[in-house]
Image 1: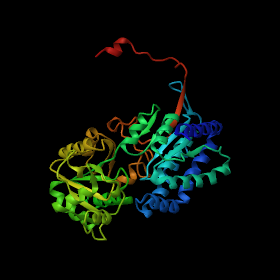
Image 2 (image 1 turned 90 degrees about the vertical axis):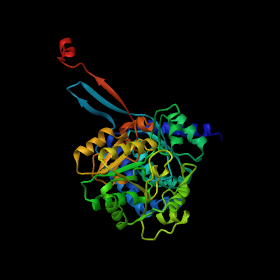
Image 3 (image 1 turned 45 degrees about the horizontal axis):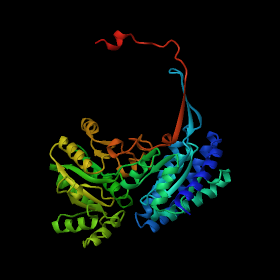
Image 4 (image 1 turned 180 degrees about the horizontal axis):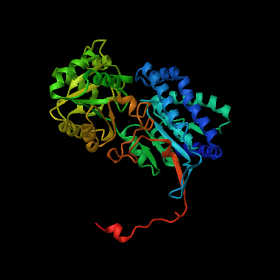
Length: 455
């Protein structure tokens, strides 16, 4: 069967299911969304083990935590939000907002986070009374099918229409591209190629840009506390999260103390030029990250480069030689490898951050450890990033958490800097159509020309 015909059948079935589901009230919708999250929470360990087994990436214990915490955080954010019928009345402006579905959502998901990203996509789609069809990465097809089987075991008890959630039976590029062309809205998480395909599909698309998080350590912080948070962030799930730190900038006079602290907390400091060259040859192939090192241990990456990394080392710390397209160490590494740079002034650190992001990761995330509000706001005013995390474990908090006010998600958009249509954390609101009823404002205040144009 041709890809076009096969996808057409899936989309047709999804439309029937979506029309039936659209009749649900808010309470019924929220019961469905809760099941999506609760299933991942209840089966966190089984799903984590399957993810590592199938993809060969990441750490089981961290994926268990990720499955549980993302289920908690996203459901907590969604459970009291209106997404059915009238969701807002603005008496002062005479506006009533009514939420309506966008229709059938096509979700293209990666192998790096094969459980929580589909969970989040499904929760957002179903919160808006949409249907969703998944196109998983070929290395994560079993994960998604198992997840769907678990969901349907629970959803059937709620009488949810069949085919509300489906998955492509074939993970080929042709099938994914055909799905993008036929659905109403595309959600895509993955490399630059698939994101570009989504935006070229002719349908509204929610894509995310590349990550390459830069972290600044300011001169006024407790170095041990800052390094602890960075190490936790960078080593979580073996550095596979796109918002984990890739480069850290430290004041020149704190460099030796920072290196010492990183080493005290499990870093292997790699300084030899031959060692660095060997590592770079393994990590990048023709200037592109080698998939074989993504989400692997420091020991495995070291062994691939002919380096003997002691078993008690959690990450590899490498001094940066420079910043620019020709310096591979300033790019995203998606592994427990961290580049360290020095700076003389805070303004120089901000400029270095801009320079690194303009090589890769523009629009995504910057992390800073500082107690200086002026420095934090200087960074905020100048950095081309949609998120700036202050004094936090960046990798697990940039997608929203109980510890900050960012919208909980697994899709962190990068705005126009990263070639994305939105600049925040992707949310269920991005999968709603809003009808606005506009009443005339009683006794409106209309400014005079003098008030408008006078000095």
